[in-house]
Length: 153
Ligand SMILES: C[S@@+](CC[C@H](N)C(=O)[O-])C[C@H]1O[C@@H](n2cnc3c(N)ncnc32)[C@H](O)[C@@H]1O
Image (tube, rainbow, N blue to C red; front, side, top):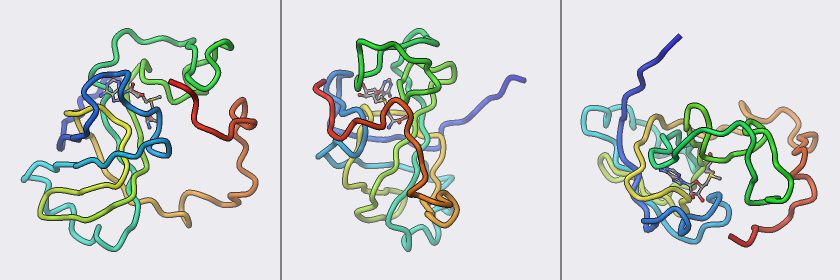
């Protein structure tokens, strides 16, 4: 099957170049601004009660896809792309869980962002621990299990 996905907005951040962006929101200290295009603004109704959102977006500046990559957290040990969050994926879809600062009209301000400026937004979903985690203490993180800190980029 082949899909078409439409852009529903744009993510703005202070990061203009690939090497400037942190690898995850958890390692970012910079805020971001999510513009939802006016025709989708109605869909933001009731989002204000949530503290965190899941952003899905298109890694529009990722070049060729790779199935084996060298991740930032362990560059000397290549990994399969689906065991990582790397950007050169077959569908180039990125995901960031972000803390909402405020929502004004069709703009969501988030406290910390990890994506490049002008990244095309695909979807927004609320983070709901009840839905997403059955036994959080039993979650296993594979090759990342001994990682405690942000990597040097
Ligand atoms: C490892 S990826 C992870 C991003 C996301 N939080 C995830 O888990 O899907 C983060 C890196 O992707 C790159 N990146 C961010 N926005 C991008 C974009 N629009 N196009 C291509 N690469 C991007 C940056 O270099 C950043 O350091």
